[in-house]
Length: 349
Ligand SMILES: C[S@@+](CC[C@H](N)C(=O)[O-])C[C@H]1O[C@@H](n2cnc3c(N)ncnc32)[C@H](O)[C@@H]1O
Image (cartoon, rainbow, N blue to C red; front, top):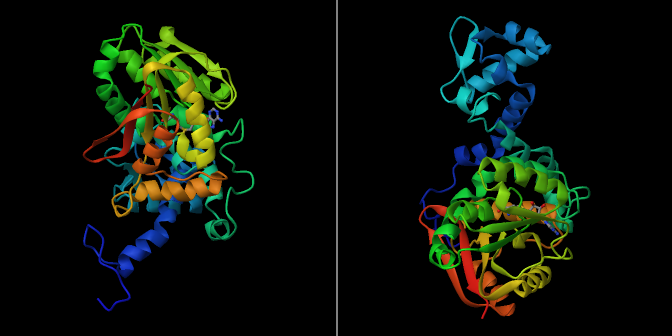
């Protein structure tokens, strides 16, 4: 240590040329995967191995382009070269990347590496200089199409923390046979739907933009709770919210807004909670000093910079301040080992 550098991160690994190059070149792997999913290359190989000319013929694509793409996908471990010029799907690829597979998750690419994020982060240095959001990438604009893809494909982002919420509210919900749950900015809606699935008398009011609620409806049907879900389409800041509710959930939502707007929304949500009801906030809540283990939350911070006027990942202490500022009490933080998102619950007196 020479006084210019701080200590290594918790993993103890220092910076090396290899690690740095991996970070620099990582976008090429993302680009190859995006393109392969878009071209449906994995579907073409699902019927059996083919050589590059065979794949190119089926796709009606450029022979050289396909040849180079198949080699790159083999290098990434998504295909296997059979040694006779033909390529086959590597183990796991058929299950996860062939569109007819029940386990298909290629659609997630539209969210995790879709055009919106790809373009929004394209001039990050410029955005850091001038502030966000990037023109045309304002995630808070009504009808922002990204949210429909998000609601369709990313239940996995929230499922584990939805379980945490359901576990922590189990006793409270058991005492209220006709539990009334409002989930604002619900997206896919899994947090509210999980409560409905665990408590047969519970009803859920799912709130989001109208086109997003169409995707939420599909998830409610698949989970067998659709007959107990009502929809409140519109802007969470202005749409009549009804109530009173026993539970109000804001999952992966507040960090899109600056503090003043978050506080305003929390006050509104507290206003539709029954006395004794619980307000739940869930999502990433990174803490100072844990940046290395919470890197995904901080990378989300850059996305929020690029796609919102004032959003940022709030810490548990920030949420505590916001929740008590809205007049709520008994704020509790709920975490699970190995799970990055957290849940906070608070009670209306
Ligand atoms: C990151 S997603 C979170 C979805 C879900 N709650 C979850 O936990 O994954 C943010 C959601 O907030 C919704 N949203 C953003 N601003 C909103 C507003 N003003 N009114 C209603 N919904 C809004 C978006 O449409 C999107 O579905």
